[in-house]
Amino acid sequence: MLRMDYFSGSGHEPLLVAAAHALDEQLKAVAGSDPTFLSVLEKEDLLLTLSSVRAKVEGLLVDALSVAGDVADEHGSRSAGAWLAAVLHDDGAVTGRMQRLAGDVCRHPELRTALRSGRMSVRHAEVIVRAVDAFGPDVPSAVRDEAVGHLIERAGEFAPAELRRLGDGILAVIDPASYDDAERAKLEAELARARAATRLTLRSAGDGVTRVSGVLPDSVAARLRIYLESFSSPRHDAATGAGEAPSRYLDPVTGRRLTHERVLGEAFAAMLECMDVDRLPIHGGDATQVVVTIDWKDLLAGTGVAMAGDEAIPVGEVRRLACQAGVLPAVLGGRSEVLDLGRSRRLFSKAQRRAMGLRQHTCAFNGCDVPGRWCEAHHLDPWSAGGKTDLARGVLICPRHHHVVHDERYVVTRLPGGAMTAVLRR
Image (cartoon, rainbow, N blue to C red; front, side, top):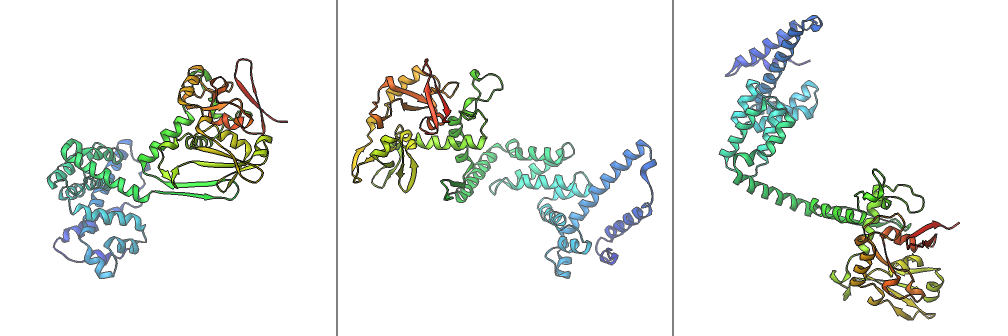
């Protein structure tokens, strides 16, 4: 129970205490009254009046908290709001918000007056303080006061959420020059915080999978998202039919729909493989490249494993990677001497790729609508079997189907028209 003597002391304005006691007594007197049998008009009147009283009472409470530091000192509390929450066994978060607002309204006398008169709620006042505090230190005080006055006028017309949206752009209306400077300073501060928080972690799980996690600035993440979408092509092609999932979102054999996360993951892998190593920084004294080593007999037989640095990969993957720039297949003999080292002539030239693009508008796989400009050039005759980099024996295949072509679990065939299909080996 609240001890009434906390509020019974004398001061310069004893009428405030008397009014609080009178209101308390009035509400106690009607505590047993039931509003059920009031008329509609009476209920409307009651609801509006109580809402007005609540706004005035909360405004007075905020005003009292702003000058009640001596109460906190008297009881050894960190603030009057903390003391009040402890006495009332109330939620400290609620009174804490009221206490913070009490400190804020001291800087804006017009806001204090509006709260005391009940012209706005505490939530409206919090929105206004947040909007003005976001201006930055270089905005003149006169501009701040004008913004506060403008938002107070609009508080009676808008809910707090709507007022927040208005407050976010209020500086641009009142003082465009200050808005440009403040917005620039705000964005620079956000970018500095984002850069300081930037992290990227690659942690091998030991089962052939590496978990990638990180924190990126919004601008970098947006650019990455655009790049990944260019490889995964989220648009629906007209050829797929209305509402039908594009084939790049389906498993090429089972036809089941892939998750969005799976599609983005494969797009990320495809993006890395398509990077132009000639434009990457020098790394270890040479252009950044991956050297894959494999025994000559294993390569011909299509068995065994190859090594990409310290990582083991299957032979089928080596054959696929050999089609891509930035990967040098080092073929080893019986005593591990290098018999052959992949050269750029093993790769299709830009002119050849353009010619393939004129010949193919989409991936060579039957039903796949990934545009040719997002596909990879593939040797129909593998170089490991003596195949040549000839335009006539090259096709464009999307990254997903390129994996399928070089996966030993699938049987890949070409239809009479040149389209390719794949089925799982039985």
